[in-house]
Image (cartoon, rainbow, N blue to C red; front, side, top):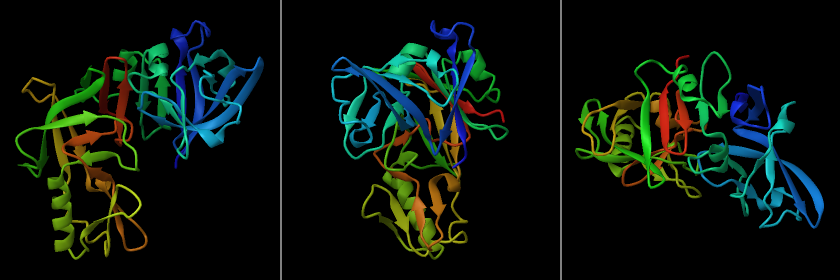
Length: 306
């Protein structure tokens, strides 16, 4: 995995006057976070790696922390890998604990970080490491986008969704209209799709000599046997045409290429990078080559300018 960075635009922080950017390295999708807390009149500090997600709750994997860090203790979070990290300390009352799962740092619309800093943006570029920018103003975000590619999804009852049409080579994948949700996804998938799209992938691969699509025994993903680059070459990109809820005008689109939804492994198998649902669901952070900005009221995304 490439080395990426967290950038903290700290102009909104009273604790860091005059400080414009703090850079914290992110390796394999994780950032080192320090949890500082008081318990039994004693100060404690623990540093752990946390994956960045669009969830609303920050979770700590229970066994990665000291036994003394218990439920009901609200730590402050900071970023130890930056020399200015002492200027950043955010009380995290939404932190919770779970067993046997990766710790994550939440930047979703209802997360504590977005509440305190106002916005979180994920920028993906070819010319520089990708970055998560906290407290990023909208005009600065728009300057990272290709003109005309910006699409905003307003939150409705805390959820981001819009109407859409899914087109495969100009033909509707499902019905005349489908609901498209923007939400964090787990189980190593970047989006969910309806059964009709899975059937298209299965039929195309088997006609090219691959085996049938099968569910993975220990996950929610799917795999294909006897699958090679040559058997996937007939798969086509598909487009999601997006428009705001209760409006009929198309105001944005997302294109998924075959390499976005299927991976050719080295063992003669292919892995599908999507799961099944009754409609399309997209993880706003996982979508490639797309910049994302999350606030308390909306999720915006665009095609990266570089």
